[in-house]
Length: 107
Image 1 (cartoon, rainbow, N blue to C red):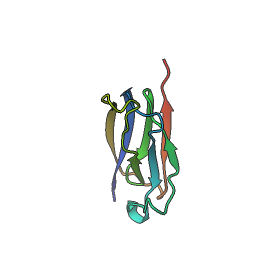
Image 2 (image 1 turned 90 degrees about the vertical axis):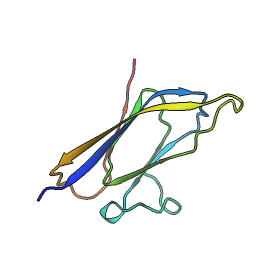
Image 3 (image 1 turned 90 degrees about the horizontal axis):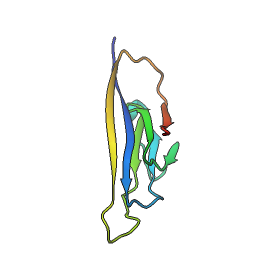
C-alpha cells in the first residue's frame, strides 16, 4: 500500500519594513494530521524567518502559522517575499510525529 505525503519548504527571500518581532510557528499535528488547538497547544518551533532562512517540514504531520505582518514604520508599506515549494513523497512509511529542519543560508 502506498501513501502520498506532502512536504513543504518555505523560504524567505526578501523583507521590507517588517517589524522584527514577526514570527512563524509550527505545531505538531494531531491524530492523522488533524489541526491542533493553537489556543491550548504550544508550537515546537517559533522563530522569525528573515531573508536567507528556510523551513522544511512534513505537511502531513505539522501545521504552520504566522503572526499578522506589521510594518516597522506604519506610514510606509511593508512585505515579505517567500518561495514555497511543495514536494510529494510516494510510499512514505514514517511513524506519525513532528518532522522538520531549519536552514539558514549565508552569503
